[in-house]
Image 1 (cartoon, rainbow, N blue to C red):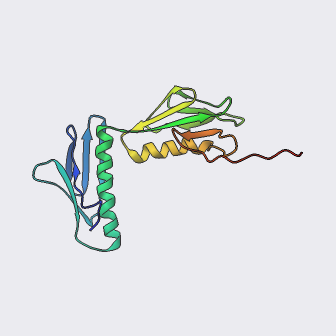
Image 2: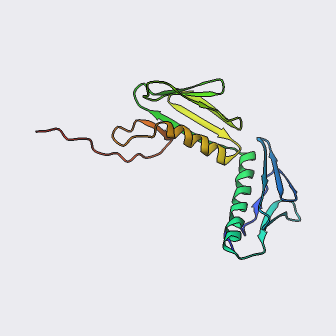
Length: 181
């Protein structure tokens, strides 16, 4: 049995779960998320209405994988609509900065032109100052995807550490060239 899949997901107070066929709708104070699970997996709310239980009939490898995946996605959705997800990015480098204009994130990170990234509707992006970017949202996948796309604009390089990195990320530094003697 899947170690993750067999754990029930506790429904926090303030969250409302509705299961209609294979479609699961989860609503909370921060928003609403919808997920349609695989037909091999059965998802039910227990008698008390305080936990979501995932189960499967088959022991086929793919079905076992979907069992754990479905449980993890439901747990992430519940956390997203109650607490939300957040990724923080730092911009390092002389003259490197980020700003928001409308629904576009503007990045000046050492290229000849500014890089413009369109901000998705499901994600909220703020810049507390010019060297920090905060990405928030209810959907864990969309928050992580947008943060990864922003980081990919200018990954931190190993010699001086310039670029966009996650807050607290350790960059492996390399020694530069040694001068001739």
